[in-house]
Image 1 (tube, helix red, strand yellow):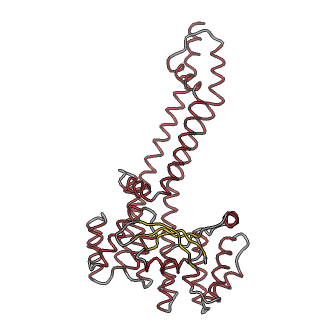
Image 2 (tube, one colour):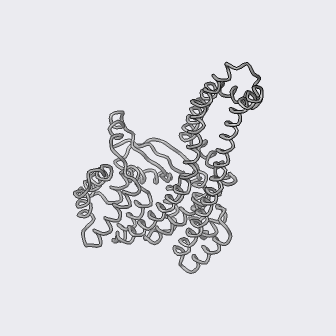
Image 3 (cartoon, rainbow, N blue to C red):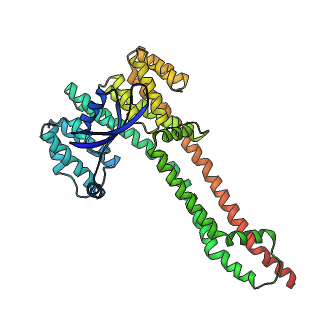
Length: 403
């Protein structure tokens, strides 16, 4: 048996954590459920030797896992069993994909020894809980293809949205890094040469030039202070991450920010709607889908809302009423969910609502990107221009004296 550290939610919506021995994550999940705790996160306790060894093994990226899922679907459609498919995928792995090869070896070995596919994948680190949930649904129904296809569609949409956000923010980040490099080069190479020049000239420097030279003189102190602040900020983030209450308050603060907060809300609403829609299409029940969605959410403030909504559904309330009470979804989207629930087309309506949030989020990211670019360009021009003027003002004064 292995020791696992876990985090979960009890029946009153409070997060709990601890350590427990279990043969697998599946057995840990069942043991915690018997105690009234819904597992949110679990990781095996490693010795120092195991930890150092695990660092040498590359984890499976989202692109690789999506490719593995596509290959598994193709092999199952071709008529192979799940164990035959896993063994064939293991034998045909390329050498660079060491992370996926290691995972497939572990999963294939477990499945061949009689372990359920969902349990075998759940024992691997970093596997999406939605994927495991859909595998369990497929095992119960005897059809793995439909859940796997539904997960593939969900994972593809999630990856596309992530790439859109990343691409939209790449150029503004590039401009900021360029700005920092330009400032660094000027402070290190350009300004010191002017300082040595003006030190040999007995002339009163203009105010702007004097302020710039004073800033350069204090540069070591400023750099040291910024380094200390960054270290303190990093340690605070580590403290927040390791403390559930602080993490919850930090996520709540992010959720309520004026511009960034609305983007975080739309991203979490999209993941909720798209994930629940995919799991329902794959055969999962609504309550089970909501539980998995809450376990697959990083924002603890939103997780608490989802847990409360799930409890409302378990107590007999409808899906749209539970979301209306606990979440701040727009009225139009809630009405769409109400219609979908009444017409037994909830999965399709959830997909439509997810499309709405994806469109809104895409527009919001593009708008922020469009606003950041000219602001950064203007800032670069102003700062560099002021520095050049400040450096050459004494030269103009000297020319006037000589003339």
